[in-house]
Amino acid sequence: MPRILTVAAAQLGPIQRAEGREVAVARMVRLLERAHARGAELVVFPELALTTFFPRHYHADRAEADAWFESAMPSNATAPLFAAARRYGITFHLGYAERTPDGHHYNTAILVSPAGDVLLKYRKVHLPGHAEFDPKRAVQHLEKRYFEVGNLGFPVIRAPAGGLPGVNMGMMICNDRRWPEAWRVLGLQSVELVMCGYNTPSTNQSAAGFEAHHLRVFHSHLSVQAGAYQNATFAVACAKAGTEDGCELFGHSIIVNPQGEIMAQATSWDDELITADCDMDMCTLGRTTIFAFDKHRRVEAYGRITGQVGAVAPPVWSKTEQ
Image 1 (tube, rainbow, N blue to C red):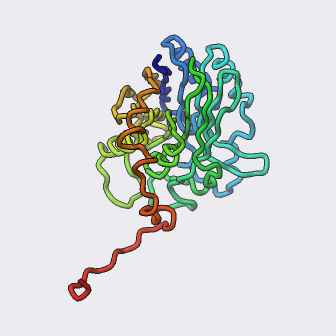
Image 2 (tube, one colour; image 1 turned 90 degrees about the horizontal axis):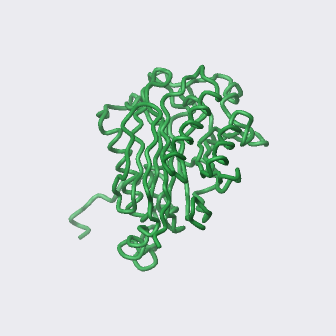
């Protein structure tokens, strides 16, 4: 019997700075209703789904940013989302800003069962951007100011989902998808479904050089498709889209199969649900043939990956040394 799980990416349109969490949650509840009507069993929401992407806004007093963070989950504001998931029997992935009881701050995602149990938690590892106000930038990107590097690694859990008694599930957040090491750590745990929320602008606003607009979406899809193929896993990459606080987010949420093919793609700049029937047995081919890690990986040749951070220039060729 095929192991089919019907998954959905619940792309969100923009959430403006002045809008409260209740606005975003109400929209997510409507997307869950739509997902239920389409037979979806697991729904993925974007990174920082409860608020605007606040790292674009500078707070001179770091403590002022705490208003963007959640100190409990579920909270009063998110309770309707948990209730809807319970009502419809849907497992869901939620990205949010987490403030721990001991005062740490993370860009976090959780995977929640229909009963409200947190099946898995992940904290973003690859934080892009900068920590101090940059006057050269048209829009700030202050993730390094507001978040600490995630301390949970890249965990995978085998847990029930939909009608399946066990699916190997892992998570990453936004910029993580561009780093092949993140995918491989998940792949080495036999992951079958990777969930990734993101908020990515349509233009590169770092003032470090020109990047053609169309390449932004291409690079995002390339990263997810390559990661899924090279680790024989399904992947759901779910975005925010549209013009948020004057900044355009490119959306283009996708669901990808273990062959790296896009199964479904969002085409709007607003709230949009895309779905796909994912047969988890499709993961078997890749991980037992070309990506059979136990047969073909050569860890003795990979020392630089964990032993070195920055790039090092190679030796200069010299004829006398031949």
